[in-house]
Image 1 (cartoon, rainbow, N blue to C red):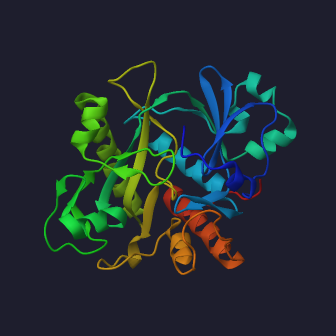
Image 2: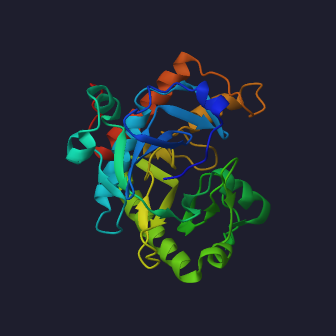
Length: 318
């Protein structure tokens, strides 16, 4: 579904394997390309692009798009009994015959493992963020106010501490720049109290179930963000859209290395952010290129997150 746009100048410097010429290209996000299939369906293609500090980097991260797609598919399947989602098919061989008939063999190869055929939905303009631990912007706000997005927290918490209970901390979806944290009351005033409470309930339920499962796989889900959409104006039945519980939308920490009171090792792109923080760069485009070693390690982190959470290795033969 829609995500922050990147400038054509930035995109032109970003490695992309290619567009799908047989389909109507709609837009590019920081990591995804979106195509129109028909009035009711879209094709979302996860590229190997990576962004940090709202800039798309000039390097591609090998296998990243396929890891994101595989993880989203895993979680969509796992939580299908909790909440409906927009996924129709994530295997090219399972695409409808009328779609397959439009695609060349080259396009099918490009789409293999990194594409999702999805139902269109009216995307709700809020990120549904759930935090189980104190990190990132939440840690910064807590240090100033002892609160996060209107939630009063206990005194004396340290960086990376487990919160007494997971909390729902929505954010606005910015077209450019950082999303902005808001309170639940602010979200309610925008989209209505009933829909807000429904999204809070679903988001917390998915997070708790995912966090319990992930810890059995050696992974701590520090926080994550969900996106929801509405089909045909059904306000009482939002569906889960976009990506789900991936290293791009979540902070994943190795459980056996967890040590509160400091930043944690991670399986997500925090590794890239940490590297970029060591550079003399003002965090404005153009972003600097990553050294080969940083690119390699980042790819390995995405593949390791996939392996731990799904229980098997991502096939790299495509």
